[in-house]
Image (cartoon, rainbow over all chains, first blue to last red):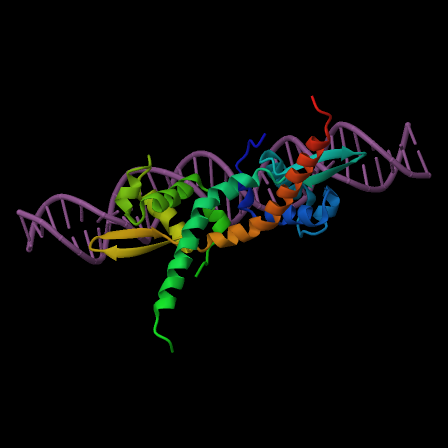
Length: 106
Length: 106
DNA sequence: ACAATAGGTAGGAGATTTCCTACCAGTCAA
DNA sequence: TTGACTGGTAGGAAATCTCCTACCTATTGT
C-alpha cells in the first residue's frame, strides 16, 4: 500500500500543511484545500498525488468532487525510525540533569 | 542553531543511514563512515554538510581527522510534529478494536 | 443538449538535488 | 622537507522537484 517514500513526502512544507488541514478539519474536497494556498490547483493535485503514493491520504469520489482524508498509518514508519534517537536524546537530558544536580549551590 | 530544514535532511536514505551509523557506533571519522557506502567521499562530505546545517551532527577536529557525532535535539521538531497524528492513529486503532469486539463470536 | 464546475493529466521552465572528477589545505611521519 | 593521508571545496552533468499554462474528462444544473 505505502509504495512511495514517506520521508520524501514529508520533506515539502506544502504537503505537511495539507496533512495538517486534513487532520484539523477532516475530509476535504480539493478546492477547499486549494483555497488555503497561494498556488494553482494543478500543483496542489500533484502534491496530493505524492501524498496518495505514500499512502498518507485517500480519496473518495463524491459526485464531481473528490474528498481527501488523512491516513496516518504510514507515519508509524517515521515514529518507529525516531524511537532510538528519542531514547538517545532522553539519556542526554538525564545526563545533563545529573551534572546540574551535582553543581554546588549558588 | 538548526538553520537548515530537518525534514528535508531526513528525506535522503544515505543521510538517514549516516545518522544510524552515528547512533550505533558513536563518534566516527569521515573515512570510517564512507567505508559503508558505495559512494565517493566528496558526496558523503556534502551529505554531512546538510546534516550539519540541520544541526543533526557536530564535527570535532582531531589531528587530521574530523570526528562526527550525533546531535539528536533537532529531531524533537519531527517528534513534536508527529504527536497529533500519533494521537489520531491511536484513536483509529481504538475504534477498530471496538468494532472487532462487537463482532459476533466465530 | 449546453454551460459551468471539480479535478486530473501533459508538457515545459527553472530551481534544486545528488552524484561525479579534479583539486586544495592542513596534519603527520619518514 | 617531502610524501602520504584526511577531508573539504569547485564546478559540472544528469536526474528530480516544483511550479506554471493549457487542456481533458466527468458530473451537475438549466
